[in-house]
Image (tube, rainbow over all chains, first blue to last red; front, top):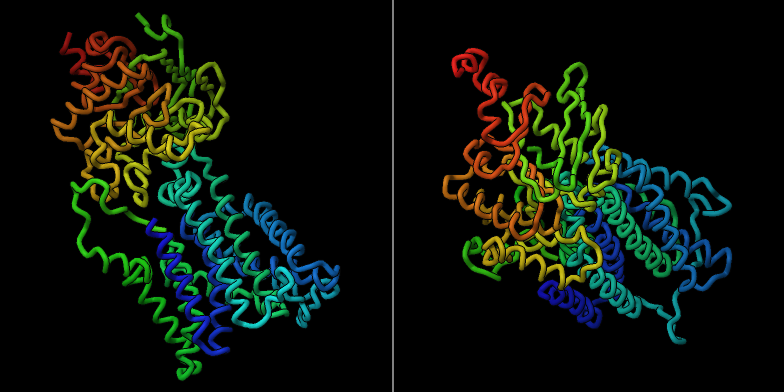
Length: 323
Length: 252
């Protein structure tokens, strides 16, 4: 219940900001919301099931290119095009998941990194379909009940609505037997199998869920920017998604959103640093991994409850991961 | 005398051999467990007890041999399918899911039977905790539990899956005397209520002799003796395995 309130507070903050900030900040907020959808998805794979994926951008790209190709080449409405774009990405993740998820830890990270690089190469070279490095332009925007979802403010409202639905769905999954199974798999695979959990099946489910969210983020990106190119979905973006989740707090929907927003705005706030931003970013990540492994959300939780829960208090503090 | 012969056999492993390279960890071991029977598996360190449990639960594949659970050959089934078919196991030092609360850990164990709603899962988990006298810990994090309570929560998690055969790997290790007494009382109560068969690996001989109906002794991967606790205690091969050849002769 508390996690639903935190999610609502974050979304309402975004809504309130939409009335007061500049056009430029609105655009950044839109980028943050799109990234948040992708990172809430990545949280299934990394935060819950413990699968280190450096290929998340490829799934964002698959969704975005799917929508872009179906709207510009086949003339579909973006609403209709989004359905096969998202479902196809999910199927691709399932097909890749079964062989890939035999790998663990660093090996899985490396394999998914390779997947992302491969996606970039295909997108840049399958010119008749993807337009190569020139990308695909003039992707149509969305229309809802006769109103065009055009302009940064309107789009932000739409993006926040999508994030609300997907965030609530993620919280529901977190509290379900699938959510517990994913966390059990991350905590101890052998013990998880010993409670009757199909470890491979649950890992693939987490991977597919993360890809579905990524594809929705890709569709949002395509109908917001109206243009896609291979550079929008390269490995650097995949690493950024992972960084967003770690900074915000892995294993937490609120953390995914906070991390996505912070790492979207931070480069803008620190523009004075120029190239030095990368050095700052690296040091910040290092500091967070060492001193704040549960991210900003973890810090907030510690601040709210500075002492350990009393050992005898029934129904008191909830442990570990909070949504 | 052999209880497994009279009662319906619920778990039967026949001719289990497990080689690790040149090392023979298990050689042609047979183990059958009757419905509701309490079997203890004993033997010196390195006798192959845990290896046998790993083979039974599918964590490691036998080099040869067959495992039949409830009339069904499960030799090639992965671990989770054997669990769903009625097997349950605890680990030597207890393995819980630290990111889940106590009741959520139990709910994971209860979820191996499909078709339960979320609220039914929670009710079932709380009832299991209540039966073990742990309901006041339901919402605590695993990190707040003592070692003894962690092991009891692990046992509760396995029982929540309603196994037909419960495999216990040294459940008393690391427990103090009071906790061992408590564990034994719980195990007796569980058997009275659930009619679950138990295979117990334990070094605490007092516990083995007081609980087990039948004892199977392994040494160097072979089954060297089987019988009632009293028979096994008097068996010269068992005395030799535990105390050395000389002691066995001196005892006669």
